Length: 213
Image 1 (cartoon, rainbow, N blue to C red):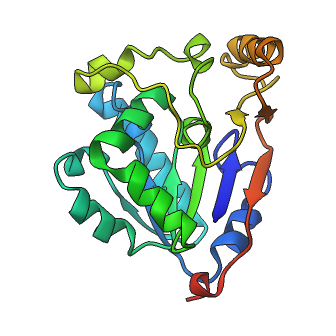
Image 2: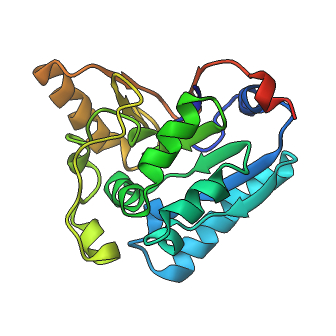
C-alpha cells in the first residue's frame, strides 16, 4: 500500500510523491471534499490542484464522485486506470460521505491493498484514512453533508491508518487554532494520532514494479 499524506498540498517534499508513484504519471484528482461550497469556488480550487500536478508532469483527469453515486462498477473501472489518486482538502465529513455513496471507499481500499494505485491526500484527503473522524467536528461542520448531499455525516474513517491524521498543527492558517483542541481531545482520550505541520508529509510504502510503467 502506497500513501502520500500531507498537511498542505504537496508539502515541502513533492519529489517524494514522484518517487512513490514511479514512472506512471496518470493522476485522478478528487475534489469532493468541497462539494458543500458554491460550485464556482469548488471549480476554482480543484482547477488549482490540477494545474499544480500538471506542472509536475502528471496527466491529470478530474474524477467527480457525484457522477458515480449509482455507478460503483464504472467508478472501479475508471480508477483502476490511474497511477495515483490525488484527494485534496476540504471538509472530511463531506468527502467521507462521497466516498461511501460512490463506493469509492471500498474500491480504493481494494486497489491500495493490492498495490494497484498510489493514494495521495492532503488535509481532509488524508484524514478520511483514519479509523474515525470524531474530533474533527471541532474544525469542520459535519452538517455540511446535508448541504452537499441531503444526508447525515458518517463518523467512521476508512481505517487504512491505525492513528488519527491531524493536519495544520501549529501552522499559519485559521484552522490551526481548532486543531489544537483536536490534539488536546485526543491526548485526553488517549486516541493515537499524528499531527503534521503544513509542509510536512508522511510517506507509507515503496514504489512497486506496477508503478514503473
